[in-house]
Each structure stands twice: as C-alpha cells, then as structure tokens.
Image (cartoon, rainbow over all chains, first blue to last red; front, side):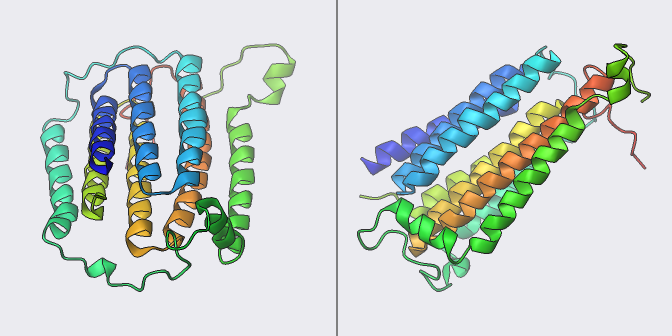
Length: 186
Length: 101
C-alpha cells in the first residue's frame, strides 16, 4: 500500500515538474506546478508530516500558485513562448549535462549506501514519530521552545516582504494625483 | 511495508534537478520562478524524509521555515516582476540585461 501511494505520487510529481519545464504557456506551467505540489503533500502525509501537508496545500497551492496565476493574468503574459529557438547556442545540452552531473552527485551516494550524512545523532530536537503524541503537538512544541527566535524572525521577514511588495507595486504618487498616465523613465 | 528513505531522497534529487535545469533553460521569468519553487519543494521533501529516518522533529520545523521564506520570496519576486513588466511589456530574462558587465 505504501509503495502504491509512493509510486503514484512520484509519477504525479515528476509529470508536473516536467510540465513546468516543457509547457510553452505560463498558465499551463502553473497548473503543472499545482500537480507537483499536491504530490509532495501526499508524500508528506505518507511520511506522517500531517501538519506540513495541510500547510503545503494551503500556502503553496492555495496562495502561491494563485498569486502566480494572478500575476500572469494581470500582466497579460499568457502568450505562448517559442521553445524551439535556442537563444544561446549550446546552452540546453550544457544545462542538461550539468543537471545530470548534479543528479549523479546526489543519487550515487544514495544508491551505493554511503550514508555519511546520516551518521548524526537521531532525535536531537525531539522524536518525530515514536510515542503517541500527535504530529501538530510535537511541531508546535519544537517551534515555540527551541526555535522561538527563528520563529519571531520569520514574522519580521513577513513584515519586510509586505512592505517591499507595497513599495514595488505602487505607482508614484504625483502622476496618480494628476490623473496622468505618465510612464516612468526606464 | 514502508518505502525506504532512499527512494524519497532519489525522487527529491530528481525533482531538484528538473527545477535547476528549468531555471537554466527557460526564458520566461515567471516560469523560472516556478522552477525555483520546484527546487524548494524538493528540499522540503528531503527534510521531511530525514525527519522520518532520524526520528527527529527538527526536520519538519525547518520545512515550516522554508515555507515562510518561500512565501515571502514569491511576494517580493512577483512585485519585482510586475515592476519590470510595467516598464517593458513581454520582457524575458534575456531582455533584462541592464546590469550586465
């Protein structure tokens, strides 16, 4: 049963990722991204990270992809991109070569069982699965005790992001007041 | 029977590399941004897998922080993209080369 879930979710994830990579239309790419995000959420559930799966669906599929689609529609850039022309000669084979080399660098240690990075002590922060406490309780306990300072820092980060978005998105006040459609100098 | 963590790690590596290749190959800034999201998701999957393998909740806490940073990054990044497109319509990543040395 676990294998069935894993194989189906992996197929959805890879199909969505390749869809993002190959679709000409940005809207199609965004929808493929949704498929990938749902597949990752399924694998989160399969590994008993229930809270993160819910947050993944709400934040990523519910907010981030909608924001992408909103910007695509707002800018009217939903025209198809011509993928046939290669702007930089030999760039695609080079990119695929770099990708395969990186993939080999990551996967080969996994395949040959060199788990050097797994030699660390387990359960440094707290157990993730052993015991009966629900996943949300464990996550909250770790978040609000050991990781309290980073958690507070993320609130500062979000405020900075909101201010940055407002500053970037608003038009200059003067031209708006005059009711003119002045284009800024590039 | 549970799936071994190596399978999850391999899947995450493939997902990461698809995102990386997309970032290198595509010209549309929005699609490049989506490829960055793919890479972030691959890393999240790796963290959750290690949280399961090592039985340590710390991995899932890190995923939480990555989600927050990804949300902030998308907000600012899309703001920049909107600001760029307001000045020049239909710009690709190749057209935005003013800072090129």
